[in-house]
Image (cartoon, rainbow, N blue to C red; front, side, top):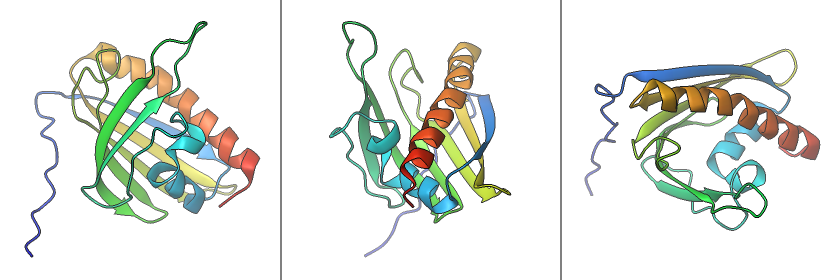
Length: 157
């Protein structure tokens, strides 16, 4: 059986990117699992995750609807590009009009040492325009704070 190389999205015509860094309380192992196996613990709607933590494996999940009454959930699609246990998760990230506008963006999560927990660096690249980038730049810090709260509150690795 031959293995084809992983096709990384060409981001040349989508130059907008962002970087978010945060000191997380959770261990690198807990964060790695959260990004590769446990999206429904901290981000995805329960029961909506289809995911295998393998390079080039596709994933799908929906986020919980917001509002009163709740609106529709937001689907997220992607595939894993690189996985280094407890150190790095790189995946493509595709959402609809209000998110990545259908663009296959790339999210890279680097996990490193920190005196208390983990230093997390998230790079999200490949946005068509500044508006989509800025929307994600304001959302990711809240998402990571929520992830930190959920993982630290549970105490599980």
